[in-house]
Length: 168
Image (cartoon, rainbow, N blue to C red; front, side, top):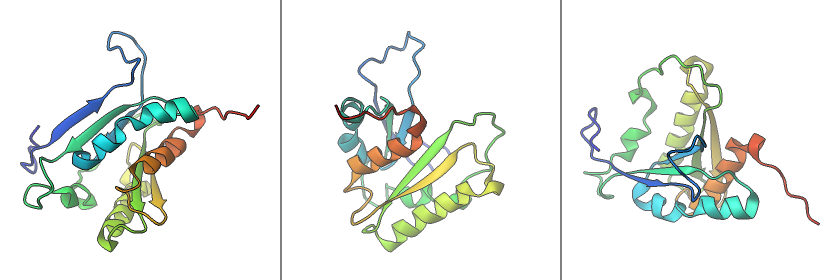
């Protein structure tokens, strides 16, 4: 898929829940993973484990990837530049949520960009159609701690849909 604004080519990868059936009315949360080149393969099986082990909701995972990591091709730094985004359109949904993961061992620039992006979209004047949460992975990077980043995001994003399990 080619982004008409930037001309960048993206590859889209999708992982459906095991019980997914397009013909049924069942709705699933959709989790969009940027840096899909490296993170999607690491993350794709995680929702199944968390659903079975910790009763997290199953989700459709969409990985958005560039065709490589070469800075000539990969423009992730542009994707996270808040002023590039147009103002959001009018919306009526109140259940949309976004989690941004950053790690204390990410580069200073990556930490700054994650913080700036989250701050920009969490501001009341942004009129964003979602609530934003910044998840900071202590002692690691967002990429090296992909599974735990996802786990923490699911816990925060869907806390109202998770039933705690009691020990026998």
